[in-house]
Length: 89
Image (cartoon, rainbow, N blue to C red):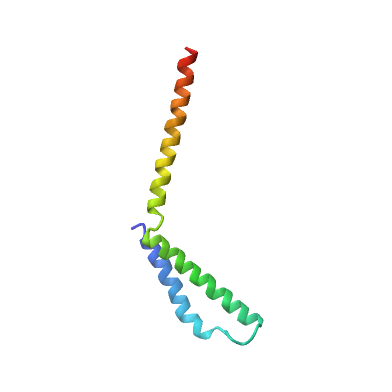
């Protein structure tokens, strides 16, 4: 269910692109409507790419590695702290 919202968001963004691109004024020179159209299309494509990235789970391995590194750092810190308290006693 976690990725379901990303599928919906991506579908909405693709629907907006399919509906709006034929109506946008692109190719009329460097005018304000052309610049707006290009920026709008870029943002919509960025939204689609971000949701596709989440759906495919590209960062799952990276997240797992970060969790391992954090656990190891926490364990090392705990070892240092317990080692210092033993020396004092």
